[in-house]
Amino acid sequence: MSGFPNRPDLATFGPDAVNTRAVRNPSRELDAAKYNLLKFQVAGLGVLTPRAYLEFLCTAAVTISARAEVWNPRGLTSAPFTPPVITRVGTGNYSVVYASPVTDDLGASVALSFASGRGAVVTPSAIVLQSVMVSPLSGVPNGVKVALFNAAGALADGSIVAIWIG
Image (cartoon, rainbow, N blue to C red):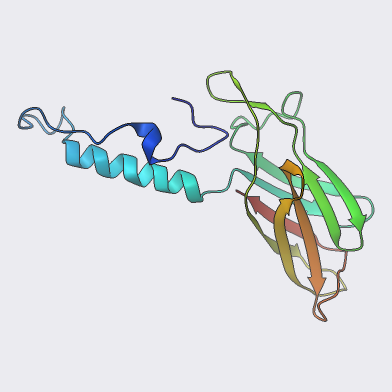
């Protein structure tokens, strides 16, 4: 069973376990009810946790200040773990695209596909940003669109933002 970078759902863990006999030694044996609860919780966490974290300066000269991805738990920076490509599409409008496919924990190639994201301002600029919107990038399953808005609701640049991609 492989998990990263895509997340296993409950069905991936197989049918519910059933005790074939009473648990004799709880320090060495796992009760089926406890195992079923654990797999339910792990599947739920996997579905809701982000797969990538990225901080970058939103200007014409985009600079990445921090990044982490579930398919790169060692934090490597050379191929195939290169940073995402961030393109400034226009004022306050950026696309973030990760290389895909990536290698999973078993060494197999797995295509990335993002469905959601969220963002926050890390370092405010002279232009006070009010919100950061992260959404799937149309036609690019391994990318997201990032939009930054000022207090007036207009697109704006100039701050470091953090995004979490799921």
